[in-house]
Length: 294
Image (cartoon, rainbow, N blue to C red; front, side, top):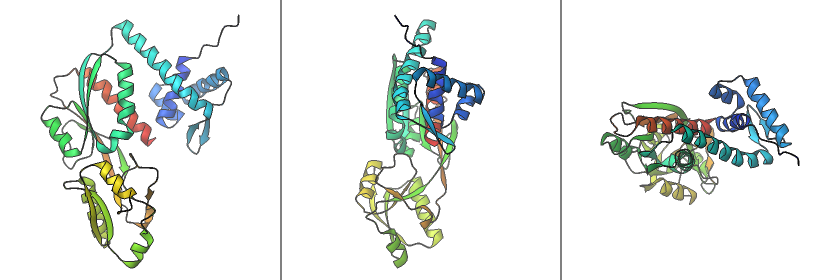
């Protein structure tokens, strides 16, 4: 009987890390290996699978259909390997963690982070909250959250760490004739959160500085409401690429550049929960944010 090929777990880890971090050069840094060693592992994996797994796309790489198929299996194999080792070493985390995320990250990042964390530590209870910046900052101060992912506030929490900065984009539906609005000098219809809102203030300031008239035509208390109104053609909004619906457009250089907004990871230093739990969760969040911006 022919013995089946055993996939190399180290090669699988390099493969997954390379895709998650945007390039195999980034993976080499994360894994403390040389880029040539990571490339050799990828080549070994392709030989074992008898398939090309990635193709170059500019400075980055994308998965082939066979690579996409392998990715799901690779994540499961690595998760089981890691869980096995933690269980044997008595390292499975227990207890609970209370996390919060700004609405923009709720749909784009939260599912992947929660799923991975739950697979890594099945005995840990997770309490998750998706909300806007102000309530999340208040919850940290009131000790009802252990960790939160926020837009960078004017007065960052003491334990806040800026992970990256995202470009803000003017976003609209094709039913809005942006060219005609600008040519005619008509006020730009805006879809915004109710006050107070960091991005609303940035949008108004940006248009005022450029001398472009505007009017708020729709106000929402939730991000889903903002997206629904923009998709209905009620006006433009200002957000980042996080959670951007596929059927919406960005204005690019036709409107003044609104700059960037930082993503802050804030932790509750006075939390009574195990600091190791927070540290592990914080690393998962950082990896997820890096993957979105790789």
